Length: 230
Ligand SMILES: Nc1ncnc2c1ncn2[C@@H]1O[C@H](COP(=O)(O)OP(=O)(O)OP(=O)(O)O)[C@@H](O)[C@H]1O
Ligand SMILES: [Mg+2]
Image (tube, helix red, strand yellow):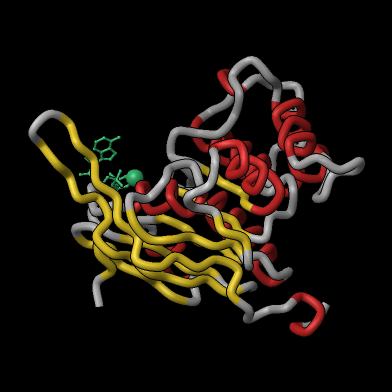
């Protein structure tokens, strides 16, 4: 598919002026202070910044897992923020793949069942993306479909989580440290997979500390104290 067919270059993800405050007792943390960004179809954007700078908070707001206190998030023309939790979950299942730092697998389901659950959450008669076997192959776990998450090593868990995030060929892929626990060879393989998805038209946003990841990104955004550093 050429750019015209995939719509490469159009905005897949936009965030305008996001604010997020956390209150615990007297303490108030300003985790996000006016973050705006856009990621186009086919584009890979890396988000870096020191620990506590707001990267995971930003990702959760972009994914509709959390509600910003101010600002708005869109995927294509659909608003993600300021909607009911059920609406956000439906939208996420269809259009957004998310890989969190804490993992995104259900502990009591094997890998194949975790992927099938993602397929069925998106609705529709046939999966919107590749089948479970193909996804597991792509992330380098072809023979682990029957394994439970607790039977996997850290790097394998990260790759299984990525298979779930990619299950419905999302328009937007959001990943928090997708290669954090991986050795160099596996990291390169996963990066290649993410690049392939981007070339097929997915907008990819990756939170990372890895220089390898930063080097494959089209753009890098650096967060500091809840703001994008100019
Ligand atoms: N649920 C919460 N309640 C209170 N404060 C929170 C909560 N989640 C995050 N914070 C605070 O918000 C700020 C941003 O946290 P966030 O997790 O987004 O940072 P991060 O950039 O992802 O860090 P890391 O690189 O360590 O993952 C931090 O000061 C953190 O302590
Ligand atoms: Mg984080």
